[in-house]
Length: 187
Image (cartoon, rainbow, N blue to C red; front, side):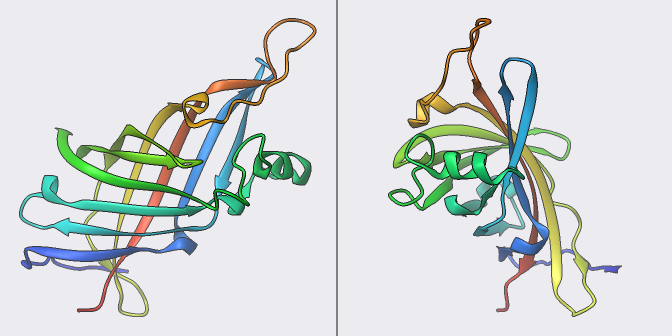
């Protein structure tokens, strides 16, 4: 892949490439290990301000039913009303409110995360965007990576079970990590 010069256009629109993007989560299991999962159904748009990246906008939609933890029984439970309730709440969303520089190549993206119709402010620490490259089909692409932490109970994901040895089956703190590839939209 060859690199492409950054555009001089004030703003550009970038669509999330769901095939080359992943949103993962991890949470403590039985107080002894960490279970990871991912959402494979992700879409969204970044309006990138090429003059001042802090004026950019981010809108992401995640299909709740696309959850995958590599265990069908656990996935079914997580999709049930005990957790995500995908029948009633088919999407998770994130909409940025503001962006601040947090160091060289690092941005804090403040926005509202909505899970189970509960919207709460979160801060995503983002690295990127990368320099643009042109793929083999002639599309221009950039990438971003980021992470945040949430308390699942704040979003109504309350189910748990006490363990005989003390503690609980599922931890409350969830780490969310993302690696997103974006494609420049046609003008």
